[in-house]
Amino acid sequence: MTDGVETDGDAGAQPRRLWLKNPLAILAEGAGGGIVVAGQRIVEIVPAGAAPSEPVDEVMDAGRHVVLPGLINTHHHFYQTLTRAHPAAIDKELFPWLQSLYPLWGRLDPDSMRLAARLALTELLMSGCTTAVDHHYLFPDGLDEAIDIEVEEAEALGIRVTLTRGSMDLSQKDGGLPPDHVVQDADTILADSERLIGRYHDRSEGAMVQIALAPCSPFSVTKALMRETAALAETHDCRLHTHLGETEDENRFCEETFGCRPLDYLEEAGWLGPRTWLAHGIHFTTEECRKLGRHKVGICHCPSSNAVLASGFCAVGELQDAGSPVGLGVDGSASNDGSNMIAELRSALMVQRLKLRSAAAFSARDAISLATTGSAACLGRPELGRIAVGAQADLALFTLDDLRFSGAHDPIAALVLCGAQGADRVMVGGRWRVVDGYPIGIDLHALREAHGRAAVRFR
Image 1 (cartoon, rainbow, N blue to C red):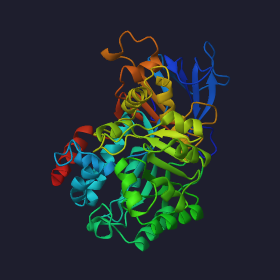
Image 2 (image 1 turned 60 degrees about the vertical axis):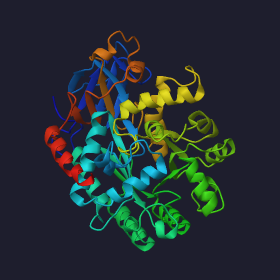
Image 3 (image 1 turned 90 degrees about the horizontal axis):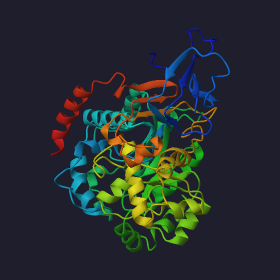
C-alpha cells in the first residue's frame, strides 16, 4: 500500500496509475468496474466487467467499499470544538446562545485555536470530508494570525480548505450583539483580508487553499464593512460568505435597526451575485427565494445546527428550483456538537422529510448531492464533488461492516439511512489521507488529551 498516487521520482515521469477495482457500489454512472486515478485526477471510468484501457501500476480491490465523491463542508466554526455541550448555552436559541458564549470565546489564544482547528479538521476528514470551509470571525488580542494557524493545520493533514476571513465591527456599544472586546475596526479587518488573500488565495483548479471574505452577520457588522468587503472580493476574485436568514430574531433586528429585511440589507450592500453563499437561509419568503435564485446566490443548509437551536427549516427544494445552489455544512461544533459530514447527511434527510411531510420528496441520494455537487457549486469548484474523468481525485470510501448495515440492500442509500459514522479510506487530490479509519500522521489519543486540556480554559 502506498500513501498516494505519486510519480516515479523525476519531474518528467508520468504519475502512477491506481485502479480502484470493482467497488461494492460507486456514485458514478457506468463505473461498476471502478475508476483509475493518476496524480491528482480521476483519469478513467471503468465499466462493470471491464479492465482499464491502459496498464496500471497498482490495483486496490474495492469490493468492500462504497465509493462517494469526497464530501464538502461549506460552513463551520472550528474554534467552537472547545465549547461543545456547554452548560452556559445548552437549550438556548441563537441570540441568547451567542450572548452566553461570546465572553468564553474571547479567551481564545493561538494554542487553543490550533488544537481546535486540528481536532475539527481531523473529525471532518475521518467522516469522509475532503474539502472544509471555516468561518472564523473572532480575533481577540493575540490571535491576529488565526487564519494562518488554520492554513498550517490543513496543510499538515492534507485536507482541502476554503478559509473565510470573518469579521465583526458592530459591538454592543454600537447596537450590535457581540461584546466590545471581540470586535475589530474596519481598517484592521480589510488590511488583514488583503494580507491573507495575497499570501494564501490560490485561484487555480485543484487549489488546496482558498480564502473567502465573511463578515459574520447583520447583527455584528456595519453596512459600510459589508460594502467594502464586497468590493475587495470583486477586486481579488474571491468569494463572499455570511450568516443570513437564520432566525426570526435576525429579521426583527434588521427591521428595527436597518428598516429592512436581511435580504434587502444584503442587496443594498452589493452582495447579491454568484460570488456569494450564505449559511442557513431559513427565513426567506417565496419571493426572496426567487430573488436569491435569479442572482445564483448559494445557500449552505445546516440541518443539525438548525435543529439544536430550534431555528427552523431551510427550504432546500424551493431554493434549488429557483436556481440557487444548495450545499451542506455541519456548522459550529457548539451548535451541532459534532464535525461529522457523513452523519450530517442523515440529519439533512430527516429534516427535509419532516419539512416536506413526504418521504418521496427527498431521497438519500438527494442528501448526498447537497454535500457533493451542491457544496462544490457554492464554492465555485466544479472540479470537486463528482466522480468523473478530469475531476480531482477526492474520494470517500466506506465499508458496510458494522452491525448497523447488516441486511442493507442498497449500499449507497444505506450510508445515509443506516447512519454511517466514519470513512474507511479518504483520498484528497490522489493521496490517501485516511487508511483503515485512521488519519495518516495523527495520534488521536494525544490529540484528544491535548484538546481536552485546552477546553478547560473555557469552563
